[in-house]
Length: 459
Image 1: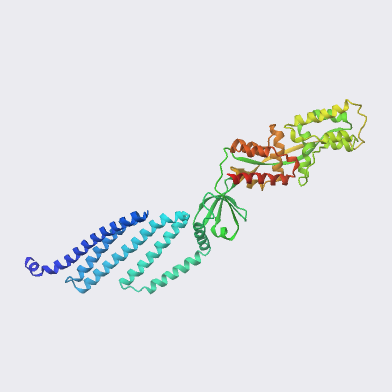
Image 2 (image 1 turned 120 degrees about the vertical axis):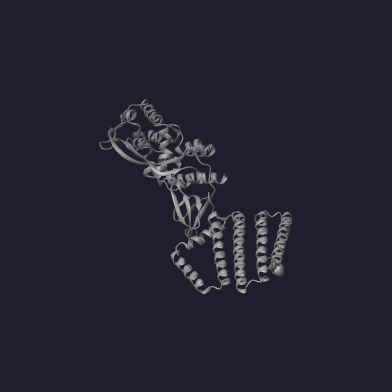
């Protein structure tokens, strides 16, 4: 063995020298590239430098190790077939390392810059995975060519797989590209309150590669395919507003009329019966017009004044009764006392000589309210104003009119909630100062919406 090494040392030394020389050059280039990138980074202040500097330096050294192995094998006395196998192995390792470094660097750079360009996280993941798949396929094709394996069958297989996926995912692909479009635009983002022309609305809680998830009123979650966002009109109201301390629950009110069996044929009987009938009777004869004729601007009238003027012929007294502004009263008790006081004051001036004809008496009727919670529970001004567009006029009447007398605070439910739960004192006072009796119910709804929308724009 010693004699053979003495005679053939150069057959081992030359390949080793070639390999070591490549290693030295690789170490030198690794250091040079690292220093060059560091200096360039200081000049440009590029924050992505640290993402590539170390991986690039290590890759350069690895590539020169492989180059040294390839050169060493070629200058050695190994058989030609062995040299060919070594070259293929070295080429395979080089292609694998090159593919890996491209995937690694692209993933880091895309993760750095795509979110800043307002791409959603699912879109970023999709782009990275797409690059990864393309690089894997390209690397595999190059490796097959290196080892002399025919690539035509593989290409055909890839085409068949792509076509099969296209057919299978034909309903998903439009959502996929729509998701990329949404993710790359600044139109909508997580946290925005949006409304689709198809009726769905709420805050965006997630944008994925194929759909969007909305958290609607009442905590209902909608799953919207991405393509639907491009096919239909979408209104974006912007970022979330301040959340209320307590949610507001809208109620539905159904009103039934009940005959009490009590009637009056003159002012004295009207006054005496008015003193003892339930509050619901007074409420019926003073507020019924608002609901029954919600499409008209209500007159400040009541059934008592109309009956006194039309049936008894006491026009002056009827006008005085009709002129009572019910909005000034915070309770049915106070309103009842006002009516009784006007009638009794009139009776002190003279005898009650006029009586209604048979069949024209004043029949006292009673409002029977059935109040049920609706499906609408709101937590902020945006949800509140959008729900105002949807509720029935009976629900609006309940919260704006009946609540003032029911609570005895002189305030409607909306003003109380805005002040106590949202700290919107100015808006609460502005709504409280409205005289709802000068609007139709639809006109009142529109006025409330305009006032709240104005406030939202100021936030």
